[in-house]
Length: 332
Image 1 (cartoon, helix red, strand yellow):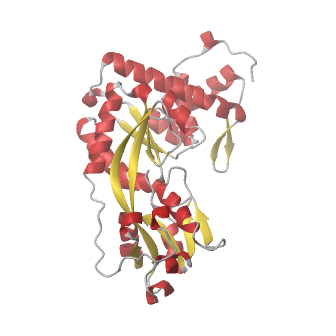
Image 2 (cartoon, rainbow, N blue to C red):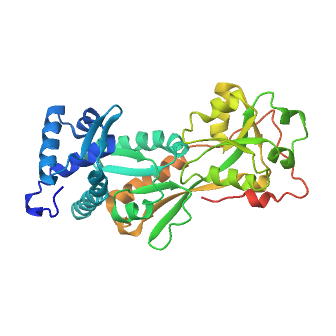
Image 3 (cartoon, rainbow, N blue to C red):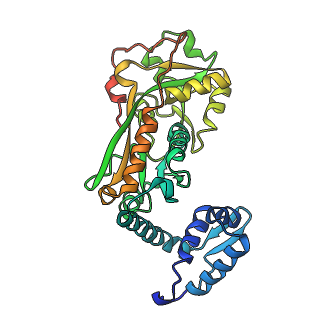
């Protein structure tokens, strides 16, 4: 690795190629995004290795693993490219039908399942070449990534984003308990005290308001009540189906799991069972016409999805003395 880099020697055409390789960790997927042949991208990687005097990406059994130097330059490159893309869009205006801009949205897996299909469908009607790229939430760098333009939006629960950030509510979701059919709690009076004496499972992801609510319930539960944590939302309903664990999930997701796996849902008391999901962005992109267009698409997508669910057979939990349901309320 060189101690000092000659900026005059940098071919700016290499930077989007680095970004794609860093994002996908795979030559074939990165070349597909860039509309290049794999050999052309491999040649570009060789040039980048020579330029930076570093391997950048090392082949492993699971893909192309970035070197420490590649990790160090990834965010500055992403910020620089996002800034250029935003400035050019602002100067030239934004024409959806002619744009091939990429919009990056940080969200949870459940948030992605909720909104991404509708966002993509709506965007393609007026901007067929625009790319929507959802990414996991990196809570350590979320603020700087939004401010620098490496990420355009974040969807979820981010109370630490303060001055300089904008937010807009996307919708109110009911939250329910997900459990297997035949769970012992179904044979008892449905109270919150009975619920907190169960054992629990949860999806652990930055930005998840459902995780916040689950942890609020845990404050009233025995210290060993949490028995399973996962970063994979697809694993959660299958674990619930095979155990007596209970999970806190959005109602629409719980209804889908109940339908597909024969699970049951229990509704929480009114005052503790609704959460608001927000869209976040940085004020630096407030006036960007392309960014404003995508904000409207995201808002339209959220408004078009009905997350209300009917529960004909499962009763709502009753409030009980000694348990404050306000402690479980949350706003994202």
